[in-house]
Amino acid sequence: MRGRALRVIAALVLTPLTACTAEGSAEASADGDAPAVIAPGRPGEEARTLSPEEVGEVAARLRDEPVAADFAFMEMMAVHHAQALEMTALAELHAENERVRGLAGRISVAQEPEIAVMEAWLEEHEGHEAHEKHRGHGADAHGGHGDHGGHDHFDMPGMASPEQLAELDAARGGEFDRLFLELMISHHEGAVVMAADVLAQTGDMAVRELAGEIAAQQNAEIGRMRTLREDL
Image 1: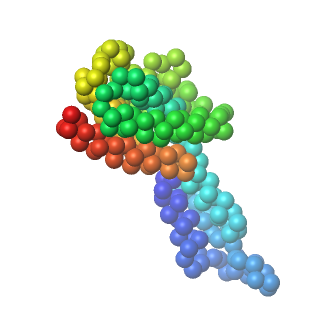
Image 2 (image 1 turned 90 degrees about the vertical axis):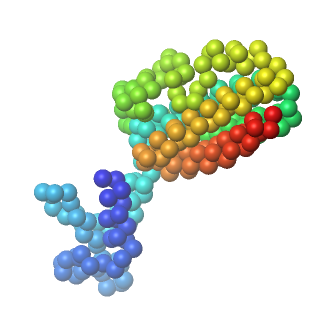
Image 3 (image 1 turned 45 degrees about the vertical axis):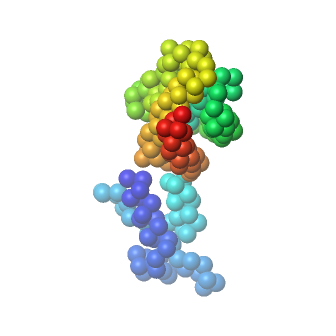
């Protein structure tokens, strides 16, 4: 429905006005003011008369209004990224291969500021109606991952289990390198799934841009990690 509404608004804004009533046309002032726009109503509802300014406001609101999935994504991806940073910190201590160390460093540099962006977005939108809906619905808000208050988050796509993290922490040298790549590839694949999920639902431009960037960047890194794993 949101997409359909946007298409209707865009058509009204970008094409020559053909739906004005004779009365609406007459209302255009002699000093060059644009005539009103007749926006069709829902089935059974009368059409509304909107000024060009109101049309722009409605289009912006439809294009940039957070939904529950946006809050779920930002909360969950911040936790998802935090685990990636935990794994890259272990790579700084235990990785043997310099390319693995370099990869871990790049992941850390990219994901740490993204966490800050997510946390700032959540703070800015605290109390939004969609946020309350997300809190109230928990598991229904984002792919069945449950309420996020006190949740351990290990069932998110690609997340390493506590046992896998302990195994990574205990590994050394080449064994660590191989296990790190295996876990991080899976971790990135999970992030791409989460990004694709929110891109199919989001109503917020900032979330859309961040999710698109995460999907593109981590897809590229998956390819590099697979190549590196074959070279070890």
